[in-house]
Length: 236
Image 1 (cartoon, rainbow, N blue to C red):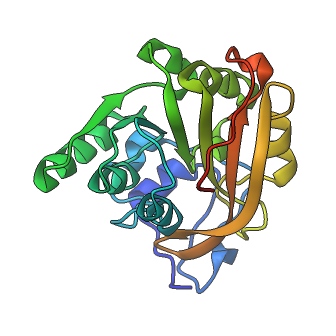
Image 2: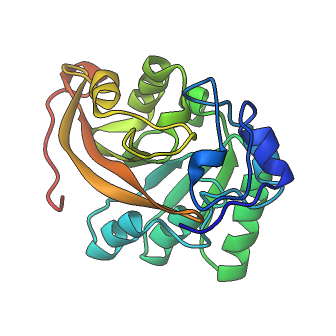
């Protein structure tokens, strides 16, 4: 893993950590398991989760034709995942609470001539979008959300009855001080009968610091989500 060099955004994002150049994460210490993340400050520079391309797992799903549009990308950052989906012909609405991230994402879409609708929106208030999507995607957002039950409610408000939720989250097996999530937390957040977890597999999440273990979850609404019976979608 490459050496970590502290930059000003690091002190704002990992507020309770001390950072030193090192060959591993040992120089970053914290008394809190999930340090507070200041996304607006992070996007003034280049945060470590921005790799200048879509996450390989998401790119593979798009290339396989496994996703159905329109897609809602929640916590889109600077838009690489959303833009990759659009490159494969999918209609995409992508939201992030950081105005700076959305500004950068919109500029990328213009430069690449890709029609993605980027919107500044709070993940805790997704219902204001006023529509439902056959595919909702969360790449590395759930694990930084404190109110997971409330966030689950908001996801239920924007997913179609027979839709699918794609989760890509950094696993608690990752030896890092950044927020991460366990299998048990995911299963609790998306418990039956409101949700049904079709699969939850171990994959990797790429960062500037190297790959981290992650979860890839495929979740569908259950009968209590307001849409009746679930129909599995082929492809995953």
